[in-house]
Image 1 (cartoon, rainbow, N blue to C red):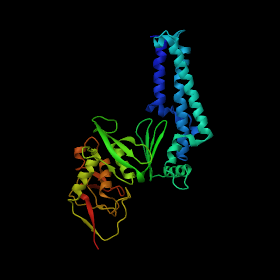
Image 2 (cartoon, one colour; image 1 turned 45 degrees about the vertical axis):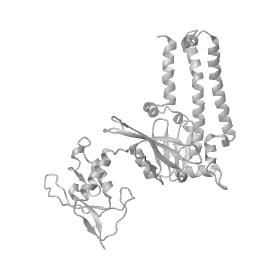
Image 3 (tube, rainbow, N blue to C red; image 1 turned 180 degrees about the vertical axis):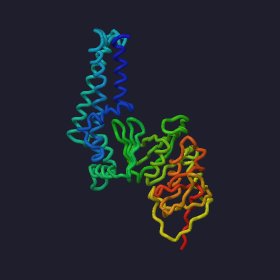
Image 4 (cartoon, rainbow, N blue to C red; image 1 turned 60 degrees about the horizontal axis):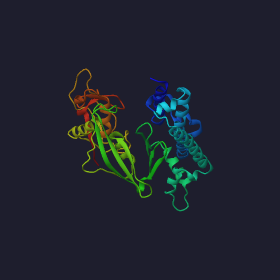
Length: 362
């Protein structure tokens, strides 16, 4: 194997790590945002400006990759390394390659200078301008997005090494290496277009399902986002509207979701707990009113027997079911319903028979 071929393989691997950084490169900080973090600033504090700078630097780094390959082949190959590598003898090919390798960084540099002179020329700013109304300019839109991104209840999903989905109170944003797709929730329609299921996945022992969602907005071109079902449900909770799912596409449930349904159905068969006290929102989700109470009804008297719980109703049945599931052996899913679990608050043990739905009386 010649030196030219060795360098070619090495540089292809290097370029791949720059464009599609694997987990190892991300861990070591070998990504464009991490290497230029001191220049880009904080994404959390200034989301829009951060990504305007990041996309500009990414464009510059991508543009110098061909030039780096030319110089590397010249230095590390033999005297006629470039010609041998491309299996051509005609110098016109080398001239074209060298010209492109030199022109691309120059064009990228002038593009960055143009951005520096006025951010008005940036693609992200042009997108933000489509949402301006009245006296509001794009900077006010950017400030609104920055403010919502700093909120703790936003949703951020890293779908792969280079694409991130952000959902705030009013905005849906798809972050890519060279651009950002932005749409406002009030005038956006989301529709599931495709789903594919994988029997084996690093995300779940029972496989996973990926869903492609098209985001349509009258102000910006449509774009697609691809999520697994777990992230998809988190996105649904964050959206103000609904996601349209065609009848021919079935969203599969995870093991936890199937268990929650079975747990809820079983609890509904238990005796009701009647109370006249006011009920607060669930301590877990803070969305649903608490609707379950733990009280010992089973006849278990073994070594690890169930105990009576004196905690007031502060959980909804779904949150308690998820807590119950996470306390079980993940390899023994068929035995989850017959298992036991400590109370999230007082740690008293209980089983499924000890969970009662709350019925308020006057």
